[in-house]
Image 1 (cartoon, rainbow, N blue to C red):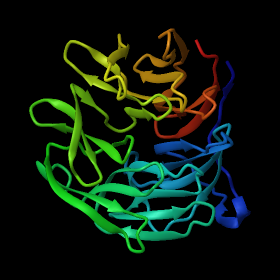
Image 2 (image 1 turned 135 degrees about the vertical axis):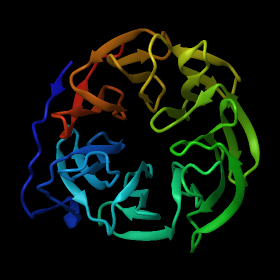
Image 3 (image 1 turned 120 degrees about the vertical axis):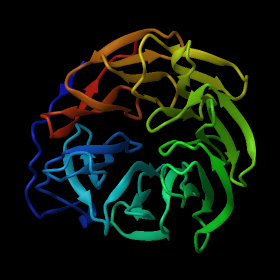
Image 4 (image 1 turned 180 degrees about the vertical axis):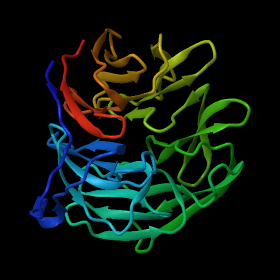
Length: 326
């Protein structure tokens, strides 16, 4: 196992990177939203705070990181992200992201932005960025109006709108065949599954897919999520083809987790550190507990992972580790 440790990142300069569109910075990274690997494993895009005085202000800019986790530049945007959700297309050339109260599609090489809709919270976008699920209802409202947007129309089009009670703020998982899940709590926590016309097509009981706690693996048609069962906490797996649900991680509560694209590896961050599991044998290996702040993000090849490291009480950076599958 190889650790690549970064000290405080002070990258100073004005030289343009990445086809002249990302910009070098003198930003100190204070906190992070989501990270997403590029499909070839050459680096990552992610959301990070650059403020030096206010931790956790939910005011992120888009960063470009190399494969070792070093901040290589930023994507200039007209506003800051206030929502940690960040969705890339398969080629990692575009992102759907909430900037301020509005939803945008961002061309990552150029930084050009397309306004999609205003005054919404983003739950989830489809893997091809064709659809986005949003709400215009305020956070904490018991019943919220959910909208499915078609982003490929000449002008983004609302496909369906309906009211839903008890939906969690940062839930949302895109599944298969134009379906998605939202975590709801109406006396019991479960994941409701809808199609793009807002029709309820399935559900998973005693389950939640809050931010960075849900993965759908298309290669195996399996859905990984956090169990909300009182008697069986941890991570469960549900196979949509066979309808079999099994328990794959227990013993500790999962803070967040990630699953490799081929479904071979499950990486889990708990209070004791990061572990990786072989999803076929359930063999487990402990990876690290070196200053983990949060997060575990598996590289596309499933041979290394990134996580947010706490460099000090206020400064964070990205660490990358190589590991061997158990």
